[in-house]
Length: 132
Image (cartoon, rainbow, N blue to C red):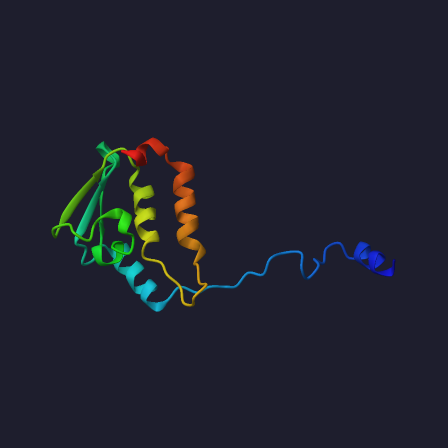
């Protein structure tokens, strides 16, 4: 009974097992460098065209990084490839591509930023746009 009273007196203090343990995962130095290259658009060997009209943009990327995702199929493409996504907003495509550049150290390392970026894009973009 005394334990229940103590918990009642301190409702603002969470119990030790109230929330799952989260670890702070830090992106690798390589991830920082790769993201910097992507953000600057330097040394890109594949370009994605997104949007139409005034919202159209060309987004450069690096196949060596994108090859980590075999679903993209960029490992066998010729150099200086142009890929078109006219129905996808450029900023959404930029965030999806940038998510491929992020990694963290450790076996269980799962940096939340790539997943968060992809979930945000999924919320903001019509699924039919990505199916084309």
